[in-house]
Image (cartoon, rainbow, N blue to C red; front, side, top):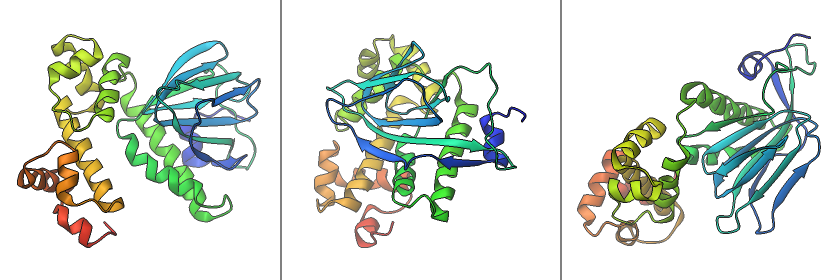
Length: 267
């Protein structure tokens, strides 16, 4: 049987889940140890930090990083208890167009990592995957879409990840309301301001402060949809004392007035 890369498999083949996928807030003592992985695995980090060791090669577990693990790999993973992990894990076989097990090229590394710029957008898709039975057609569509998006990210943004600049992402997520400046974020990343700004823009495809504003508006939308807090309370919690300015930013970034979400929860 010929070898194919994962992109080809997604276009022409099929994924067969070997166990139900999980979306999991890890407990402090969480760890994952496998002497020989019997199938492919996808590990997507939605929050938190930790360490992954595959066949002796160590890599950081960080928010926004997705790992594709090959069968036969020896895997050991654990989290940093100070930054608990929230992860999505799927284990699967890959079938070719004839319904037989497909093999990836033998020279590949035991794992590939992909940096996801907008990992929050994949959280909803991961929730959709785990909420359906594996024999549900919607499940197969959702899992294929999720992995396809990850593979496309790998093709577009290979080499953009910067572990130092990523420290600024963690700082932003931990304190969205702070009045962040580029200098303050560069300090979190332990980088010169200019080098940080360039690296961050390559990694996230937008300047640091634009990213801060976008994340605040995304969080505002989430809180308006899922909480009973007033719009004014949400604005203040995210660092905006000027409610009219907050409304203007929300309209610019989200695309519709902030009040429309509270009135129409289906948004």
